[in-house]
Amino acid sequence: MTYQQEFTAEVIEFADLNRLNIARLNRDVHANCYIPVTIATIILSDGSVKDVSIVKSSTVPVVDKYFLYIIEQASPYQPLANHYDPAPEEITITYEFKLDVRLWGHGIGSTQACEELKPQS
Image (cartoon, rainbow, N blue to C red; front, side, top):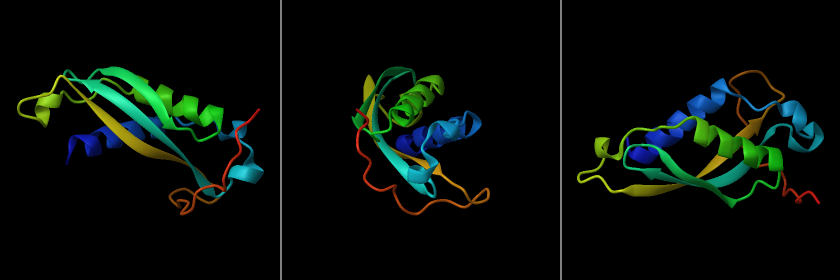
């Protein structure tokens, strides 16, 4: 498994244990679709997080804040030396996470993104 794959697996596992309260979302707009947000994470050689930033907002502030929180709280990640020789001082991982808002039973995922969401004023 690549470092990025391990990183995203750890983030998703942590997110599964610390779910967003979807009662804070507009279920009429966000039901049975996923909300994408692209996040850049700078990881230092020891696996600690140097910075987490939004590359492409989901336009749903609570979702953006949730993923920033999850990535920060799930750290530290694996040391870079576990995957790189020599280990760089830091790497940046940019990944599109998808918050799946389901009305269906457990284990059934959404296959389409929520319609284009307008930023809240």
